[in-house]
Image (tube, rainbow, N blue to C red; front, side, top):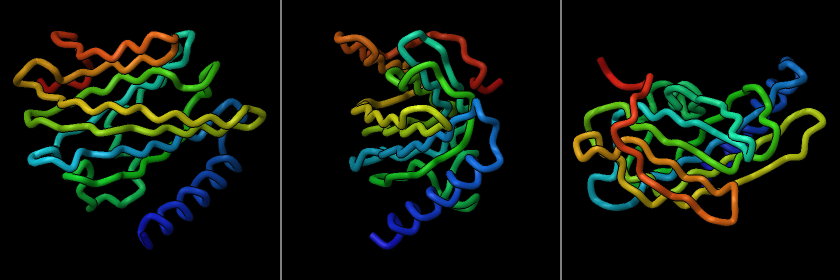
Length: 169
């Protein structure tokens, strides 16, 4: 509980710093990633996240660990853990309602949920929680997941055989 409270304080401080020195058209994105609490759910792989709004405007976060607030030595995406990430980027036209999750590695990962908060100057604050509850596994061909909740129809699908800039060469 103390760690979560400290993380929240750090997030608020980070948001204020980014807001003060950021471009007026930039937003601060906070991402909570929950790894499942089931055997072998964690991963050492890199995770890339694409955030989208209802117009399909997209913000890529390549290697989510680079936005990590737990420090460089922290083991992100561990079994049963909730990890905190934050960074700034161009504001999307509307609230985040769709994500694409890409696993860049050779092990599997069970993503329980992803929660995104967006704050920007002159913009409405938005928050969206995606209950993913899916395995990402390169070997089984499910290293990419699209979770689209922009319309009334939830399009939660596993995408496979999609070329990605995040794949290892």
